[in-house]
Length: 488
Image 1 (cartoon, helix red, strand yellow):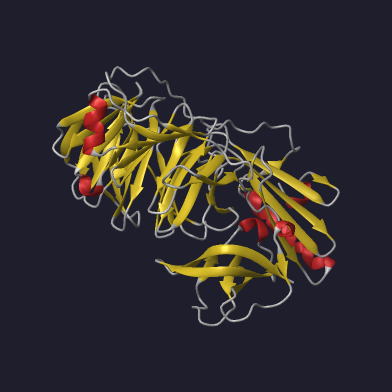
Image 2: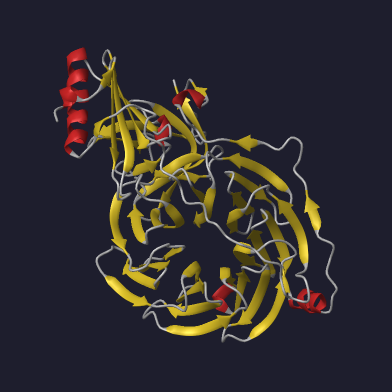
């Protein structure tokens, strides 16, 4: 089929690629208005991403549009009518949660109810983060004060950190950077990938999906490599500088960081439902009531931590001295490194879907949508086992809590009319390279060959922006910190 045969509405050409085996379900739309060519693309059923290019003449704009359409038709896209084909359903993790059989309840210091089942959690020295299936992400202090609210377009599958950058993987197929003042889509996962879990290391995104696939993408949102592991439903992916560790229905598989080869594969006792890592080991929580510790170097199972129900989540204290687990029956456990169970307590809420330990506190997010802070000190746990627990503080939202939504268009960005004085910001500009719009630094004192991880929704060739600060990252690129303003 030629480009001329593609269905057009005015100056707009709309194409779709949808395959029965589920490997693709996406659209591509090209609009020509005078000397401007606008492209919109993404998963069928969503608004998608947009790019706009300008040309010196109408004829050159039309020729560029025709070339884009022809390339897509050759790849299997076909003319379609927008809206006739439904969006492909996204997997929502369906979990059950039974009451705990533990005789005592964990000493919960405070609890914040987000309003929907929550999978995403990240805790660092400064803040606690929680994300739920309504797309709400909240930022809290360690004492439970709610500091900010981010409203993302779809359910949050997980929250991950890379140095001091925080990313949210969502059911709309995008990964949002929450580190700047206003969130933005930093990665747009291929439409055929149904995200189950994410990890980021040095700007490289590792995506584990429903079919057991593993996709690795760099900071420019470009595919580096992909593999299909032997099991489906990949609820675990962890990465370091040496390897990527992929947990799925058939165990855990380790791949070299560059994707060149499989390093090892270990069958676990049951499907992997969650994963954690320390420097020399990965931990796999499984459907058969056990957490298993695997050596990163060989995949050998070094220890097992037996629970009383399917393990939904796990975490460790630094170095793996203590291992924590949450099961499908609303219980939380603590083990020594060798597998000795120290205690089992009820969560006082739902089953813990994710967890993290920091400074004698265990933070849990659960099926009832709560973020709970548990006092995991030895004294508090002993008191809880004897029936003495604190009265948990029920955290409320402040009336004037700020809410931040992602940047979607250049028009939604605040503007400045002058280049800032020294120390007042960094100027970057958008440019076209290899058919893609990229961003580089204009201000002096930065490596000119490095690109900037930047919101795709506001990239326009020739546009300049001022950002509060840029930080260099391993791998040779810059990441944004603070506010973004358009230079006009």
